[in-house]
Length: 603
Image (cartoon, rainbow, N blue to C red):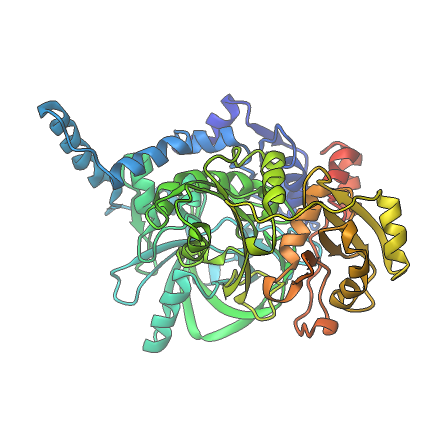
């Protein structure tokens, strides 16, 4: 999809244009957040962008990856087709005749297109340029997404950096807080290549050049979040998919090369001795991240096309645009995962597991303990090392996207010997771990049957009466999957003591349950989709899982000093009611109570 991608989306009925005046403060983000939760969601092009002072801004485009069809149009192929090509490249077949040899050589010759091409002339991204005092980040329509955000953030910036010696390039996608007219926050997480480059410059005592591109071919954006091996420039993947090289131009005030067709480019340098408090920000986990010090970019130039469009994305509670970006990543990178786990048949990242929090995997289990060996392999490779919860099933299991059938299979095989609890690195955005970037991991091996007999089931009311005889702080409960050997009992608990101590007291009723999951009062226990989202967000396997007498307990409540949790537990991202209902009143969005309730947009 070249520079006419907006027209391609329009022709495929995947674009909705909004000409009503809308504010960069909360309004655009809330409209986009609600739109992408619809089954027929579209990209949104806002053509009348303003703020509370009446200032006018360039058009804003959101949700460009807002459906599987949009992703296929951006990739110009189904993700499985790209995966098949990667598989063929990793395991090439020996040519059987002369023509096959010719075809194979032609294919190899075509791979030269993966390498980027540096242009000598200026790019269209540099048609208009501002330097020094003329630079003003506040002229960009950077969005404030959530009410408690620390300010406006660029959320779809392509951050281009290079190693100190200039030999390695990197494209990453990080949130960027706008502090003022010429300073931009760099949210480099500790595990990212950008942070590694930063450390090189810091040790050398040199300022680090950085350029941020916004817009252009949407494939740049997807490549920026692709989990490539360390040291591989993400735009090589662009060339592999496009079958033509990414065409780059040199920034005007530093040495970084950027795509010639970007809509905007922000150039500058990071002083490695200077940090500034960044955040809070409602991130893709659906929770606000804390205020922490991060590097700052001093902007030396802003350039753009003659008629630029500003790209933005919204992150928060699922499902959102990253659901579809993650779908493409999941499919395309399966062959690379198989190089580490050859017996891996398939894997699946449920959208309400927000990627690293939950992964399902299907394995051709050949020998005892094979699945647990594969779990360790997962936790040791690239971004898979951030996975908190991994569930493995065997080759005869249902399709991984059939969550009802898969959960039935897992719960009918689950037992104490199914569990592997480990620890290691985790996403820096994970709030449940006792320490930032490091915490517990849970693996469940459902490739073998480790189950015991099913419990003696009671009705929800009968079981609740028993439990409330122990504690009146148990407010509600709902049993799920009562057709399996290990039904799940979700308990809404107004926590006044450790869950572990309540669990001990409930053990006298152990013949009536197998798995207890305690959640806080903010949960709606009938909403299984959002329950899963909160549970996998809120637990650390080393601290929050209890096993005794063949029954299991999971503490998915928010943590505090009762558990020795010393960090501040974050708030979740909720839409501002007044903003949403004003947009409804103005006719910009529809009043859709069922959708609002299903995805708990107000909490």
